[in-house]
Image (cartoon, rainbow, N blue to C red; front, side, top):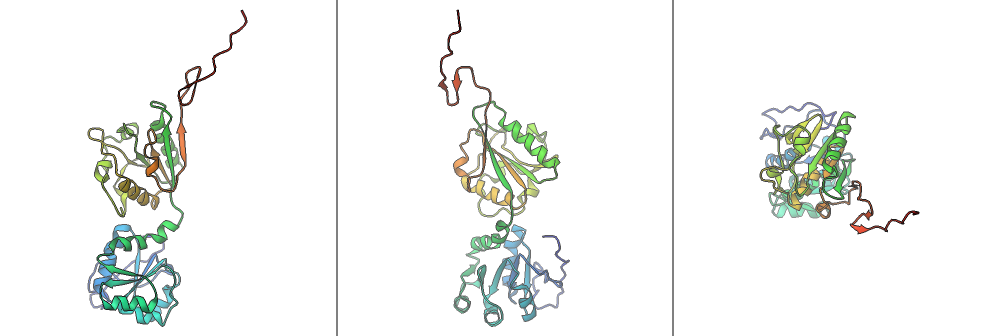
Amino acid sequence: MPSGYPLITYSNDDPLLLAPTMPRVRTMPRDPECLLVTRDPSLIDAVSATALALGTAVVVAGDRDEIKLLWAAAGVRLVGSDMAGRVAGLAPVRDGTWVVGQADVSLLSASAELRVPVLALPGASAQLAEALTRRQTAEPHAHVVVLVGGSGGVGTSSLAVGLSLITAKRGKRVAVLELAECGGGLDLLLGMETSPGVRWNDVANASGELGGLDTELVKGDGVSLLSLNRDTPAHPSRVALDAVLRSLARSQDLVLVDGGDGRCLDWLRGAPPVLLVAGPLPRGRVPGGVPGPAPRPGPH
């Protein structure tokens, strides 16, 4: 939960809190990540389950004063179909607002009244997750830098490790992803081969939103690491790589990708910067293996 949020309490006699998984905020922040306007306990639970996985703070508002106070500054606004009429006459509806609830006639009526899109739960859980992360991904997030070796053995992995350690010593949050085709050694370079934590084998087929991934990774010397398994390396799918990068972008300042020979570049969204690591070239050769000009004969 972002700094500045108050302690949360709930009471069993509160009609909005029949389910304790989403306690009502008594002292409310002025700029909540997500404002949920409803009096429906089942809807509170449904939204809370997704928000909890993403680490998103949700503030529930059920009366006029709360809605007026929080509406304009909220990053995302979710309106239960039970409260659409109250919101329509109370606050201007703007982008970043959805009507949420069970797929029925009342949901469609609420959408028409507010002129905003619908998130029919539980079927639209993936779309709800995307809506909840909208504000987070719009804020400054991690720089992603991909390191690619011009050939094998030029020290790409060693450079990735060195840069991560320097970044961590400067007090920044840094994660390293190992994607080299013949990888399975970054944990050795960092001295983390016996450290507990998630490796690519555990998330190689992941999809959707991976909330709180950073807390599960292998850690040491201030560096978070997602490495390949040396015995049975499982390289991630494109979908899994995208899910991992989205998650780490919300928790890190820098994400370094050991890209090996560069085969992963087509999988990375947003065209991140690429650092090409090259070693010394044999005499008479130029990059790409093309013979250079023959040396001119010296004087006899």
